[in-house]
Length: 136
Image 1: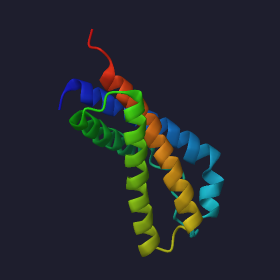
Image 2: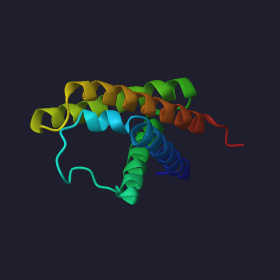
Image 3: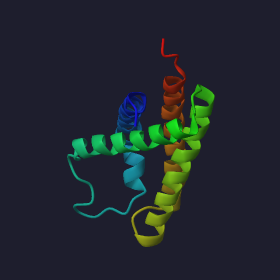
Image 4: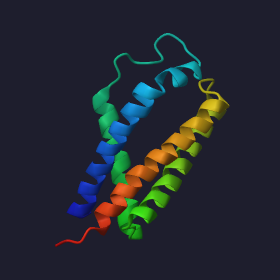
């Protein structure tokens, strides 16, 4: 893996960390809590921020690796690919949660999938720009 890909992974990791904090941690935290089955101990308070950061870096590495292998190097292609990857990955994960656990409802799945698709699109657009920059 080259330096440009690793830096791209870091960029995506930071973007998704900040967007996740804004969207899920501030703007829609009450909505998510209202659409999850609550029980004592479910939500860590405070959350393990360092683990969230590592998770976002892993996500960034996956996306950067896919983009590098696929030669995605424009904002438009980056947004499209990031949107589809984010949407499909979270849809698969949320459906698995819904099928196996009494934790989330179908309303939450729809919102979660759309929001993660948008987050994937935004980070993919930035990554597409990053990979398309000239090296001069």
